[in-house]
Amino acid sequence: MVKYVIKRIILAFISTFIILSLTFILMKLLPFSRPIGTLPAQYNYYMTQVNEGFVAVFEHEVEGYGECLFTYNIPGTKTVQYFYQVPIMAQYFSWLRNIVTQWNWGTSTYIMPNVSAMIIIGEKLPTSMYINILSVIVSVPLGILLGIVAALRKNSAVDNVISTGVMILISIPSFVLITFLMLIFCWGLHWLPTQWPNPTDPTSQKVLGYILPVFVLSLGSICGYTRFVRAELCEVMESDYLLLARTKGLTRKQAIIRHALRNAMVPIVPSILAEFIGILGGSMILETLYGIPGIGSLFVDALSKKDYNVLFVDMALFTTISLLAGIILDLSYGFIDPRIRMGAKNQ
Image (cartoon, rainbow, N blue to C red; front, side, top):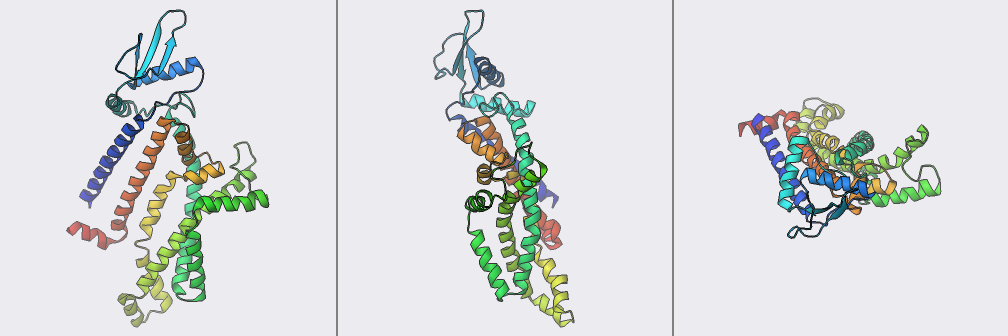
């Protein structure tokens, strides 16, 4: 088991390195992200790029470096500095060196000029975490409860209603659902705020602001857990060992609680653990539509404004979260069910 864990971690690290390396190289093939702001602020940005190894500066025009990115006349002198983008592979090795030695992932050019991309991500991350943590807390118990009810009332009217509702709701994209709900509850009835509340708004307004995004994020998970729990529980309830438990004198309720539910939860609990890891990912479209200042809307904002450094750090975070959730999902099976752990060990 230990060898398997170490192997998975190493493979995840290698996968992350390859994905981020390819992403960096492909993004550097895009047009250079020119900064905004005053001339001195732009000059400071380009000097930062020089120090980080992404841009070269000369006191004369140079051929072979492509188009000149920026020129600056040093005040009080006749010296003119010319800034050129260095070759991509040279930038790649500079990027690796900056991360390993300084944990420097670059600075923003548009969203927050000359501010570290890591600082920007750190400011946006808590909002996405709060919303997604609340959605997990809401969706897990409701999804499992509805799944149990549907399984215990299989082929009944209750089961048909739950299954039909789940089928309809899980087919509706989240951006369509939140748009529809905003039209009704925000613009029509005026019960909820039309946009994410500002930090200066009263506490009651902030609480109301959580209702719509948490509900929309929870709905898909509730439907997924309901279907999963119902399918697993129905399969377990038809198994031979549950029939054996009934023949030994256990009532239907005792057999379901002691055996059926415990065995049905084995493949479900890992998915819950993986979802807790995935809460950092946020929701790009939902956050953008509702004006939530999270990392999901930040990704869309950085992409539209060509702030490549912020975009890259955001993509790196999404990649790491996805791989980490996959590792947790795989490893949790062995810790939850000893039979799986022993099977892997014997191999």
